[in-house]
Image (cartoon, rainbow, N blue to C red; front, side, top):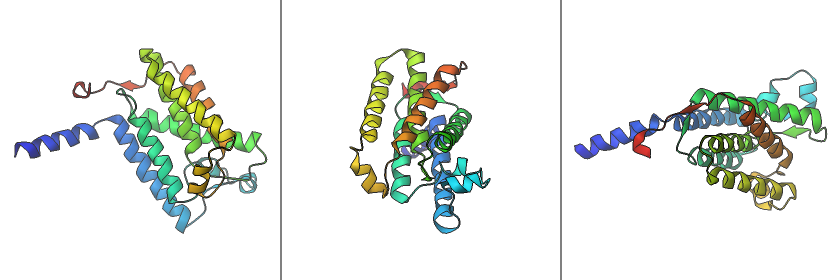
Length: 208
């Protein structure tokens, strides 16, 4: 009986964390949009359609994926990010920063990368979230771990830019759009340094 109560208490404690709530929102939102993408209507970014005033694709294009593997990889990336740091960030901040990054990435592609006719995926925004969250943690604690994460992120983006990362291309069935990764990371960095308000929620003391 006590074991059951303890498990229930631990589950409630985990679900009370803002980062976990955000992941649940991301998981169900992206999964629903992927179902719509695959079975109802194509929501991805198409330059010609955006030029025909379908501006909503500047948002939805960054929320749908080429296939289930592509979606799973991005969800895994978000999950790993949310487990990196002890301090929780309010769900509303996670959602607003994510939407901002998705729109920034898609608008930047539309304006500055005319060679890209078709784009889809959350990875650009995900790279931005890694940069934003890590810089926020570095500003909060001035520890080396966020710097290590940022260096790892930079190394990955360099590998992507030189088309060395053939595994990802094989898994998702399309070329890795490395430019979106750089755009997202730069946007996340700018947002982290520009924003002054600390969007952190104190971590539960039992998680120290």
